[in-house]
Amino acid sequence: MPPSKSDDEITRNLRLVFEEVASEPIPASLLDLLGRLDEPAAGEAENDAASTTAVSPTPAERSNA
Image (cartoon, rainbow, N blue to C red; front, side):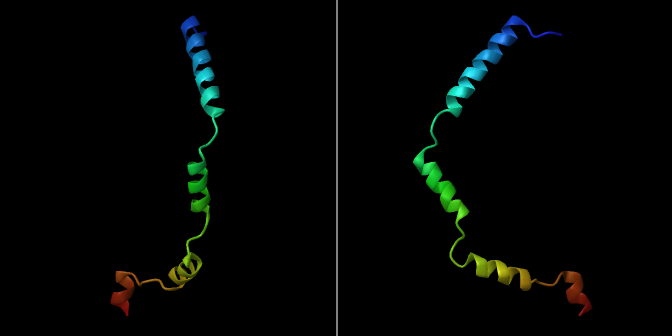
């Protein structure tokens, strides 16, 4: 079924709104937050290394010991 005239109008309006929103600048506060999320926290690398080597045994492993 071909799109109706109202579908075309809706599509056109949606494109206009999307283009308007997409062209707005990203707020500096959001860019700052995104930058902080990319930075590792202090001591995070050490904690990651420790968590991969110190694994708690499962209940089945404890009962077999």
